Image (tube, rainbow, N blue to C red; front, side, top):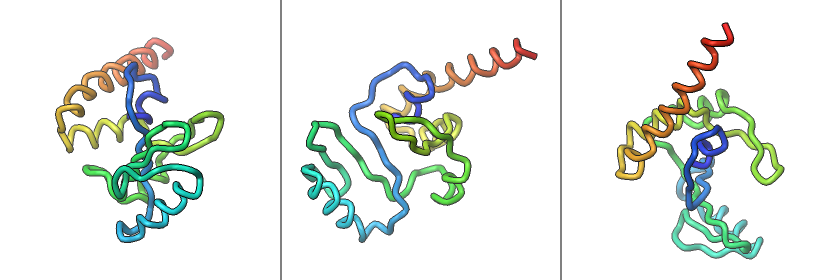
Length: 126
């Protein structure tokens, strides 16, 4: 949901999910990187950073294309002053509609409302 929040969806999220293009067995590379920076592993993919932020590494995102295809369509946003590529809101919505966890079901209408407001705003500008 961090990508959605960065694109105007009004809500909170507890962690930042980062999709990495690594085979799952290589997750130890991430673990070693986080530990070298003072972070702690809570699970093989979830880490708490030295400043208390939570990072969740994803090796695949349900409902979406492969990493390279999604990366090509990603949009740039800044997180704490650093430019990063994030999934466009439409792709976040696609994944949430596919996964359908309880929290995804709560997020779907929030995302749809922002997308609807964008469309209406674009139509008014025409």
